Amino acid sequence: MNGHRNKPHGAAPRRGGPMGGGPMGGAHTGGEKSKDFRGSMRALLRYIAVFRLRIAAAVTFSILSTVFVIIGPKLLGAITTELFDGVAAHFAGGGLSIDFRRIADYCLILAALYAASAAFACAQGCIMTGVAMRVTYRFRKDISEKINRLPLRYFDGQTHGEVLSRVTNDVDTLNQTLNQSLTQIIGSFTMIAGILVMMCGISLLMTAATLVILPISLALAVPVVKRSQTHFRKQQEYLGHLSGHIEENYKGHGIVQAFNREAEVRKAFDALNEELYRAAWKSQFLSGMMMPIMGFIGNLGYVAICVLGGYLAVRKLLKVGDIQAFIQYSRNFMQPINQLANISNILQSTAAAAERVFAFLGEEEESPDRDAAPADKGAVKGHVRFEHVRFGYSADKIIIRDFSCEAAPGRRVAIVGPTGAGKTTIVKLLMRFYEPNGGLIRIDGRDAASFSRADLRGLFGMVLQDAWLYNATILENIRYGNFDKSDEAVVAAAKAARCDEFIDRLPGGYDMVINEDADNISQGQKQLLTIARAFLANPPILILDEATSSVDTRTEVLVRQAMEKLLRDRTSFIIAHRLSTIKDSDLILVMRDGDIAEQGTHETLLAQGGFYAELYRSRFSDE
Image 1 (cartoon, rainbow, N blue to C red):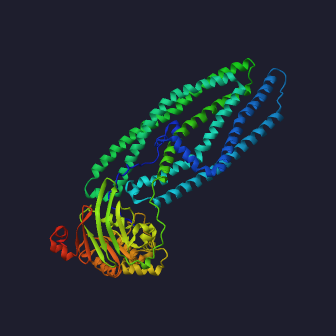
Image 2: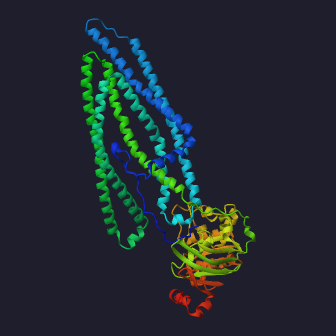
Image 3: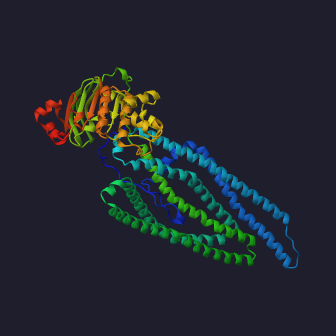
C-alpha cells in the first residue's frame, strides 16, 4: 500500500554521498562525528557481547601473531652477529669460525615463528569475519523488524534516503570496523608494547633517542590532520549535495527537458562540482603530506640511531646484529602508531554510525495491540461510525477538530473537498496508520483500537491513486497480501479488473517481471493491477482513493462495470475527483478545513447551492 501523499512533517535534511578518504595515508576521516562517543561504543559492545568468546579468541590469536612477529628481528640480529663475528675473526687471521648449525637452527626457529604468526593471523581473520557478518546480519534483521513496528508518523518526518542509510551505509561502517579495526587496535598496542620491550632490552640509550622523535612527529602531524579533517568534512558535504543534485535531475530528466532547464541544471552542477573539487583537492593534498613528513622525521631518526649504534658498537657496548635488530624495530615502531591514528578516526565514524543505528532501533514504536478476540473477517458487516474524532499530525496543529459520520453496511461514501481538507487523513485514521487525538472510530459497534492492526487492516481493501508495485512478476504483484491464493484466483481477479487483456500482450504474460521502478508498464496498467489486487482480497470494506484516475475513459467504463460487482454489499469510502465516481454514491461528505462542511446525496447538495455546488461548478462543469 502506498497511501500517504501528504508532505513530510519536519523532514530531515538529505544525507548523501559515498565515503571519502582521509589523512594518514588515505584513511577515512570525513565521516560524521559521534555526539556521545563513549555511550555509543558501550552500546555497541553490549550488542556484540553475545559473540564475546569468539572475539576473545580472535584477540588472543591477534596478540600471539604479533608477538611471534616481534621476536623475528631479534633472531635475525643473532644470525647477523654470528656471521659478522666469524668474518671478523677470519680477517683478523684467526680463521673462519661460523657456527652454521646454530644459524640453521635460528632459521628454522624463525620460519616456525613466521608460519605460526601467519596461521594465527589467518585464524583471527576467519573468526572476526564470521563475527562481523553475524553482527551485520543481526543489525539488518533488527532494523527490518523495527521498520515494520514504526508508526507512519516516523516516516513522515524522515526522507527515504535517511532510513535506507541506516540499513546500508551505517551498518557497513560497523561491519568494516568489526572486521578490521578491532583486531588492528589490539595488534597495534601489542606491537608497540612488544617493540618497546625488545628495544629497551637491546639499548636504553637508543630507545630514548627513538622516543625523542615521536613528539616531533606528532607536533608536525597533528596540525596537518586537523586542517585536513576540516576539508574532508567539506568534501563529504558537497559530495552529498552533488549526489542529491544528480539523483533528482536524473529521475526528473524528462521534466528538466520539458521546461528547458538543461542550462540551469548544468550551471548548478558545475558550481557544486567546483566546490567539491576544491575541498577534495585540499583534503587529498594535506592527506598526501603525511607520508613525506613522517618519512622525513623517521629518516632523521634512523640516521641518529645508526650513528649512535655505530658509536656503541665501536665501544664494544653493542653487537652489530643488535644494531640491525634495533633498526628494524625502530622502523616497525611508527607503523602501529600510524595505524592507531587512522583507527582513532575510523572509530569516530563507527561511533557515529552506531549512534544512528541505535537511535533508530530506539525510536518509539506503534502502541501495542490490546488483548482482544481475533476478528472474523467473514462476519464483519462493515458498519463504520466516526464519533467526534479529533486529530493533528502534531499536538499543536490540529487539522481535524470534530469529525462525525456514519456509513451503514453496503453504503458508498464519497469524500470530496479541496486539497489539504483532510480526505486522505480520514482514511489513515480508519486503518490506524495514526491514532486519533480524541473520539472513537467504531466498526460494527466495536472500537477500532480494540482490533489488532493486522486483523483491522485485513478488513480493508485499498486502491490508491499512487499505485505501488514491486520488483516481481505480475502474478506475484496481484497476489501481494494474499499469498495463499491460487494462480487461478489471481487470473480470475485480473479478468474482473479488466487487466487480463493487456497482460496477455506483455512479454511473458503473468510471468513478466516488473522492474524496480515499475516503469516497464504504463501508469494506467499499474493502477489496473492494484484494482485486481483488491478483487483478489475480497474485503468487507473498500477504500478507493481516486482508483481510476490514471486510466483512459474507455477503460474506466470497463473498470467501473467490474467494480459495481465488487462494491455491491460492501461498505466503501471513495476519495473522488471525478463526477462519475461521486454522483452514484449513497452519501457525499464534503470536507473543508478538516471538518464536514456538508453531507448528502449529489442531487440534494447541488440543490442546496453551497460549498459542494461551488466545487461542482469549478471542477466538474466540463465533465
